Length: 491
Length: 149
Image 1 (tube, rainbow over the protein chains, first blue to last red):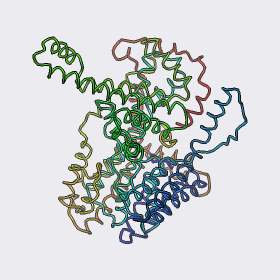
Image 2 (cartoon, one colour; image 1 turned 45 degrees about the horizontal axis):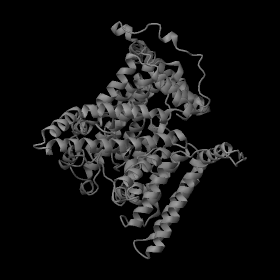
Image 3 (cartoon, chains in turn red, cyan; image 1 turned 180 degrees about the horizontal axis):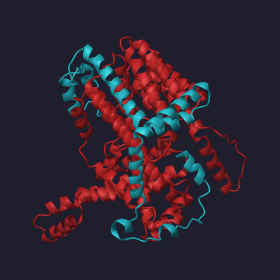
């Protein structure tokens, strides 16, 4: 059941009415939301309900066994077992084929070809998201940040709550579980903000992402050799905007739907395509994943404490894992590694720029040294606009690895770019407007939507309904026909 | 109210929304926020009315969408009746002229979508679209990737 469908609209209207009719009975409401979440997940493939249940049960039992205190060794063992079990489930369903195929290739390359037990495994939708949520629950209990739930319903609902179940955001137990313990409430600001977010999310997905996919991205990545360099260059930029609109659109709808049911999720994207540096871009892109990796991978590796070399290694390692999280293919591993390497280079360059500027200031009476450092400092660009320009272009060009189906296509893509053929075929004024408009919108203030929501909350419900209806109608009218699945469903 | 203070959220608990909430958590008859459990219930009712009005707007101006959606449902006696009713509804909306805005908007957008640089600014290669090398072989797992997306 995709968000932008009539089925989901009917489903949500019924869930909204019934869940609020149970607002006075907290436990009944949670059971109801758990039931509809399992229905939502089973609507794709009911066989994976057992997997979702097992994953939740493992984490619930691990949480119970960990408890609020106790023997440190025993706690370490329990959290270790829980992490291994969670990662085994994820590894089997998501990475089994990839590792076995890679092993077979490796053996074949050294003349040891073997028939390995390859299985045709269907990837359960949203497995990476609910596994990471389960892991965060167990690790937070182990660290003493949260207490284990007393009611199994709370944990099962936390892991399976339908707005975030299949494509995030990755909600933290410490954010969500306290909300389940208190009676849900709804206010005018949340209602307006929820509807506004849903409408913006639908526009991003059904209009911007869909058009960019059908007008340029799918074609240039299918046969890169058939298109000019200018098409390929803007095709890569179009893909970045497409995936941003696709995924942040899903996150917006999920946050809006949860808000209308009385729950709050944190922001998952914060105008990343206007970031003046790669570091800032990654702080604003898929925030729930990057902060998860920071808290549960980068920091335990003691990123900063063992000196620069360790920090840079851990940064690259973390980004490599982020790449692998996105998909079981070498293209994703290379993409993640490239992001890590670029982040390291950016830090080194920034460090170098700071040193040169400091040298220019401290040179004092040494006129020749001061003049040299001054010239260098002048030459080094410090404008955020320059930073943004470099960042977005590097991010777009490396995203070719993310989107291309294999390394052969990546090389073909870059070979086409290098030909410097400037005849646009797919890069039309319409595509330029979609890319340019989407990126320009990222420069609006962060609280633009909240401000609009605060203004619109004074509207009467009938007027608000007319506006909502006209907004949805416009999206339906101007978007291409049909609804493609969200890209992040595959992750 | 206190609940919003306890659990900070970067999205919903923005300073702007917090100010709105502090002026009152619920919804009054005229839509202006007021506090209290009655107002909270009124918020639920207002949100329901908003959704129902939006649904009516879509039923009126997007009867084509309703017709196509019902036709895609698995066939049985109930859906047959619904499809028949949707066809009648769509015919009525066509007669009244409510389906016209969608056609007009789609035509206008289609003209812009198909415009080339030469149409707008007089620059670009008009034969470029025809010169696309469609004989080039797609990569081996191109279809699989497209399906994934």
